[in-house]
Image (cartoon, rainbow, N blue to C red; front, side, top):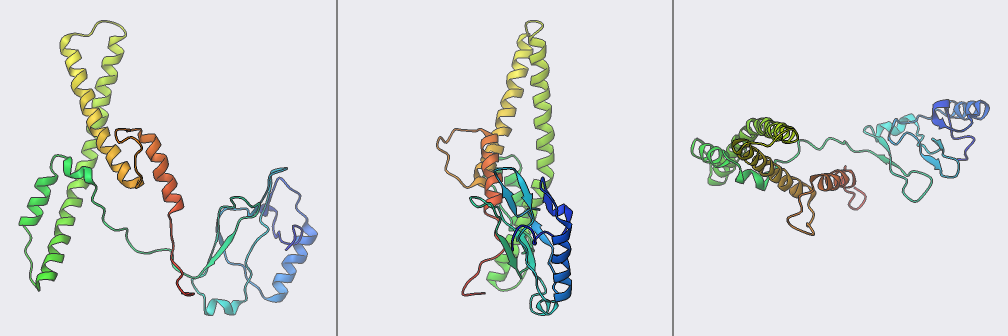
Length: 247
């Protein structure tokens, strides 16, 4: 459809002129034909003119009511436009909810205090029955639950501990600008700074595992850099489903 007859409402244009007459004709055509437009997610506008920064919603799906009889879970998503000035729009008939995410065990957890105790306690306290494979599956599930409960308790404590250590270092740094620190204060600063580095190193290990990339230098611990990779991967690797032979 051309630029003039594909826009239905004023909010579907930004920084460009809305033509009420052509929009009225287009809406009347849709109404007289008995067509419906599914709600669109993703980007609000589908066309971006680089020359004058004009945005419009020019691309859309229209369907008849009977289409919902065979595609009752239909969704429309506007994808990134990348090299084109138009965004591709995806019509899907699948549910976006694929259940709870799988349990992930981070390698750094095994280096933290309390992990070994939580694992051994959950392993030894399990009571079950069934065939050997059913027994093992149930036992591993029980251990997973114990580890998650430990981590749910340990993580908030770790955040509070990190914040307190940073406050001590910050306070002593302010004092050092006014006077010479005593040997006790210097030792206190070294101990707290060491704790900050230790906890931040655990966080860097988690980010490294999340990002699933190979560090160019294994000792690089720039957490902002790896947060960027994590966020980028989350945007790029989101998959709602896979089409195989038309299914």
